Length: 409
Ligand SMILES: [Zn+2]
Image (tube, rainbow, N blue to C red):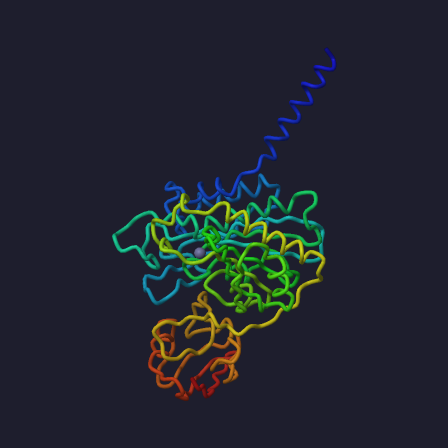
């Protein structure tokens, strides 16, 4: 009788414990985030907020500490742009035309010296509009691959990194970014308003569109040039994956913000497809087995780097920088959150016209040739006037002083 009672109690305890640690699969997370009920998770919308709350709950269930400014959340306000060539602007004053996005941040503290940041954006395009490639009116853009897949993988890694035999020599900060589709707003805001000491960040991993691993198992890894150790680690752990390496730390996703803060970055991407930025980017098209492979790969990289001291940072030639419809480029990354007069430089590409002319991060371009630069739009307009090989006087503001330099395109 007693034995039976003890057994029964033990079973009860065991089953309670089991419900508590029952893990959610990547498929379940993608299905929730890319469900029609969240209407495409447009930054600043009520639907995006619901997605943020779901992620915060998942962080809590996983036992992560809140590391935002308001529990797990870190809010930021911005002015949306209705100009297709102009990105949204960050603003500190809240007015009727401003919107609020929020990053969701959870922390796994291993009492270590350094921290690894693992991030993925959770916002998407809502019902379409700017950036959508769908031409038949409004429809829910579910963004299962872009980027419910990355968020699900981040949560899966958060789960794996808590397990007993997981690498423990670093702390881990998990960030679900908002505002990526509007111009990397959430990651840019975090880097400028960090909730941990970014000098202690050893490296950052970004997952954006990791749900469509193809039959050749091709995985693109960007940023392999941003730390001397990456190339070796990225290839040594590849297993069955075909790694397409790209050196550059600058690319069209949130790792760029961290690279520009001199933090080594790796970005994982399973590639473009015909459903990109269309309502047909749906859960049933995601390759979940492929996600398991990619997730295991990233875990093995983390494990491999566990015993390393803080990684050295290296600047890269930013070959992936794209400025369409221009004969020339300056070779800079504009600060899309800058709302003052001119175009503030947030990053400089190696061996490009701006660097050769001695321009620096933080410089504000106010005039190019005969053209005044007051904002991103006038910057782009004036840039389109120049030819390759042409030398132009460019006026910048550095520490409040105007300086004129000669730039050769
Ligand atoms: Zn994306």
